[in-house]
Image (cartoon, rainbow, N blue to C red):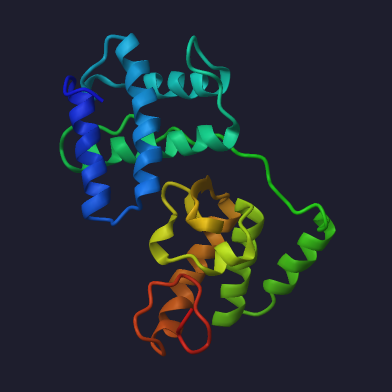
Length: 228
């Protein structure tokens, strides 16, 4: 990015905030920087170089471009478009909270839904049975198991990725989850409404009592001893 527009300077401010205040990984920052560079070019073609001038219709049109493509900017898959919109939403939310803009033009723009990714060896009937089994009871362990299964089903995460999640890896408001795969490869994927509800129920009604037994681990899903 060049030093030019207010949008570029605001982008650097948001990325610095993620790096310093939230400890975002380098891969995450690289992905967001790339996503917002595409967004900046889109706005620049509309003559918009100040975040204050961005309206909800601009964000909606950008989402349409992500789906349909544009000259020199190919269409993205639903998963990639969703990650890009998550970045745009986070950017505008930050600016609104910091008082840099009077409103959040992206707050009502939902990321596109990515296709459910299920292992071919597991049928929908099997998934339903897993969900039903995990939902039995209202104990902390039952709420945890339900949340794990919903995250697996709703995000396409591997089991190792799900149990390795930290609390900060899930953004329930944005509806996204940061997954760390093999070789430290990081990706951000949308999280469905059922998964968000299950994780919320677990974090509010179960995790606090389970965490008392532990040593302050950042792990999202805790065992009976309060550890990962």
